[in-house]
Image (cartoon, rainbow, N blue to C red):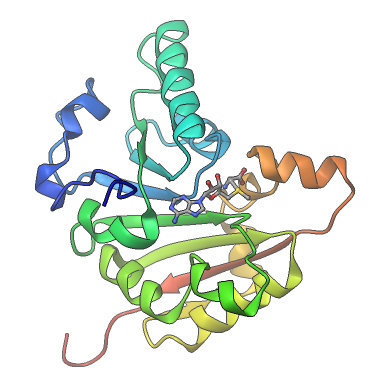
Length: 217
Ligand code: SAM
């Protein structure tokens, strides 16, 4: 179909070298995934905080993903040696997430202000669902963390419910979240987070750990 996005048939078919030209990027090296990264503010923030970790943003809108690509290239020129560890792909993460990542390669995943899709008939378009959580669990290593934040309480509760109910995840306590230096970056790094702040909106944050699959694993 013409509306299908081009996509790699497996992580081995992604041109990792062109995404991270300064790294000997081979399949399985990306550690952080920002799903629906929008304008990429989180990636740009985390890039200098974790300079040796490769991070990939996934964004479905062409104009937005082009913007992130150009901005990343500009940052690399302005700050030689920096911002080499971030990249973006234009893709439908709901369909092609597992085409990019091998089992247990990720240590962090981000869902920042995902589209709410309020109507009942549209709930299946939510980027967090039991089926998709199983795919995320596959790509995340044990001890890996999923970070979520939303300005819509209903969406926050939805994400929390589905991660908590999944046997491969547990919610982090408030104390655990306080100790994680990444958590403060979730609130205002991105365009959407800044917009919610400007409008005086509330934000609801929750994190989940990928736990071992049990005695048999
Ligand atoms: N995380 C960003 C932020 O905090 O500013 C963007 C938030 S915006 C409300 C949601 C983003 O998810 C949009 O940029 C949208 O294009 C993207 N998106 C929605 N569905 C997607 C999908 N299936 N695959 C990839 N990106 C998607």
